[in-house]
Image 1: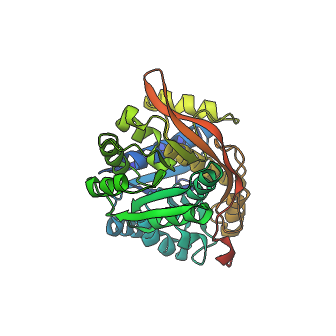
Image 2 (image 1 turned 45 degrees about the horizontal axis):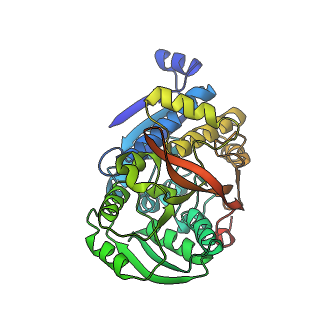
Image 3 (image 1 turned 90 degrees about the horizontal axis):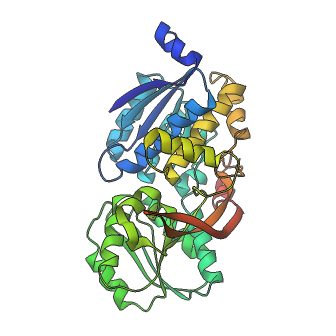
Length: 377
């Protein structure tokens, strides 16, 4: 899939007359397969932000990485060398980010991550042109580990896919959890059959199952878990219980707690307007991924107002300033250009006929990642 679009206002006029855009953005994201919903939400949120902010002169080229690292690398090479993009964004999966980001930033391009946050790029692999607008992979899990410890959980069964983000997520939970880890299981990325893992869970003496299984993996697991008769409570980061996933899981997820930096009921300036605009434009509730795409678009638009992208130092400083109203509330970049932000605990509830999340408390305030000390910028 390839989409070219410009923000509203004079940018549309520029397109009509054949004038060049001031900034050309290459969005490589997942638009097909089991993770398509995540990429679609990031794309739609990003484009909505450009529209609502009135950004001018921003051209966006969108391509489908098919959740394959080799495809993502090929697309990135094409965008840098043939499309001549100034900024890249869109990648959902950490293994794809690790294949693409170091290459494009080394070529002098900016990369704004709307989702993937591998630890390697937060620490020793950080780069002045790389900005993570979402989170570092460990973050939600660190907050969840602290929450579990503070709320009397003593034994936990851990489950995640065997790839960089899965390992980061589990490492984050263990870093802040004071109790006992009874089991630590890693599945194949993209797995859909969890019978073996559910059998292990039922046989364990864990008080809680903590898992990270994004996209279709989380849908498959939760449906199978609910139908298995297993009674251990479940917790995880928001990626396993986000709006798109809950729509597929349904009532089987009711009562599950999950950590997130955003929720549709978060009472901060601009969030209600974002939720309303996204719902009206796309006829669905926004997800965490949509909110991250929206914030990434707002960040880009804010930088474009302050500096020309050809002024590398000036544009980098404009990005670093993060002078935009995030739909998650207070937002700033740390020294390694990863977020400093509040992380909330949410619970899956039913509102009318809709299964969704609501905030029940704060899990971490002004949270920063654990790898910034290794970043030498």
